[in-house]
Figure 1 (cartoon, helix red, strand yellow):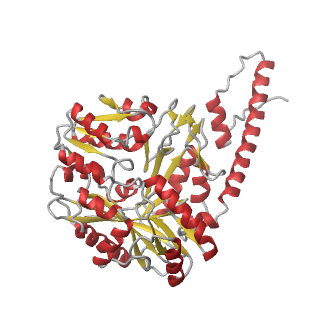
Figure 2 (figure 1 turned 45 degrees about the horizontal axis):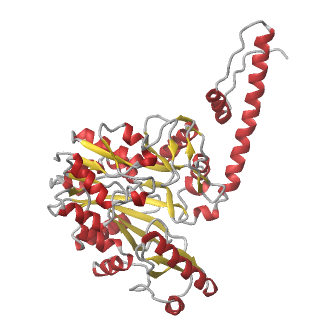
Length: 506
C-alpha cells in the first residue's frame, strides 16, 4: 500500500494511527517535540524523529520540518491525525509537490470547506439548509449591528476561519454586541491569523448532530450515520454517542443525503464529517464540515464495525471501497467520554502535571484510546486530553451502565481530571432519558453534583481509614506483623468504599 507512513501528530491519535498501520503491515515512523520525548507514541514506535521545541508552532505545525522528516524517513505518505496540520491546505499541497501522499482529502476541498463563509455558500448551492446569517463576513460593528437588528436576537458571532469554539460569541441583546464583536475578532486573529467574523441566527435549544462520511477516489460515497455531540463545554464536545436518541430514521436519511451532496460538490474523498444544528422541531441546518478524522470517530466504529483509519489508508492508496450503503448499519449503542486533565470546578482550566497513579478500566464492550501512562507528564503546550473512554452496549441503557462502571473503575492520580464530571452528567436524568441538547451543562448544576460526589467519597475514605487503623492496631496488639496499606489500595477504598471487615477488638 505504502512504503512507509509518517504519523505527524502526538498523543492518543498518533497511537491510534500507528496501531492501524501495524495491522495493515505498513512500516511507519513518528515525530515528537521536546515535551514529548517520553510520550507513549514515541515509546511504541521503533522509529521516531525530533521535530523541534515544545510549542506546536515550532514543531507539530512546522510544515517544512514535517516534510523534511518524511523525506529523511523515506516515507511516501503522511497521516496528519486531527488538529495541527490536518486541515491545512498548504500542508496538503506541499505533500503533493514533494510526491508524498497526504492521507486526507484534496487541498481544494480542505480550502473550500475550511472557510465558514465559503462553505455556507457551497452548502446553499448544493441545496443543503443553512442557518439564517450573513452571506459574507461583516467588516464593521455598524454592519454587524444592522444585520443583527434585521434577523433578530439572539445571534452567534463566528470566526470565518474558526474551529474548536474559538472566535465564537453568543449575543442576546444589542448592548452586548460591541464587546462581543471586538473580543471575537481579537480571539480569531490570535487563533487563526484571520479576524473575519460572520453572523448566524442563534438556534435555541439546538442539537449538535454530525454525519460521518467517507468517499474513495473512484466516486463512491458512503455515510456511516450520525453522532450526537450536544454535551459541550465552551462550545467543545466532551461526550458523544451514536445513534442519537433525538434523530428519527427519516431525518437521519435526509441529513445523510445532504452530507453526501455537499461532499460531492467539492470533489471530496477520504473521511470527513458534516456537522449540523437541529432545532427542537427537528429542522436541520448545515454548520460546518471537518475535513479530517474526528476525535469522536470511535463511537461510529463501535456501532458500524468499520475501522475508519484503515479505510483512510485504503482511500489514500487509491483502493476502491467495496461497500454497499444498505449494509452499513448501526448495531447497538456507543458512548464516548473525553477524559481531560482539567478542573470542572474551575471553568475547566487545564491541569498539566505528572500522572503518579493510573489504573485503566476494562470490561466487555469497553474501549480506551489513550496516549498516556503512569509516570508520564502531561505538557502545558497542548490540549490536555488524557484518553477517550468508549462503551458499547446492545442498547443505550446497556452502554450507559457500562460506561458508568468503567468511570467508577478509572484510577487517575497526580492531575485534576473530569472523571467525576462524566459520572454525574451521564448519570443525570436528562442524559439518561436522552432528553438533552447543547444547553445541558447550562441547565444542569454539575458543579453541585460533583461536590456532592466528592463529599460521598471523602466519607468513604474516612471510614476506610478508621477500619485500616483499627485492623493494623489489632494486629500489633496480637503480636502479628502489621499489614501495610499501599496508596493504591487506599485509593481503591476511597473511591469504592471497599473495606476489610474481619472481626476486631476495640
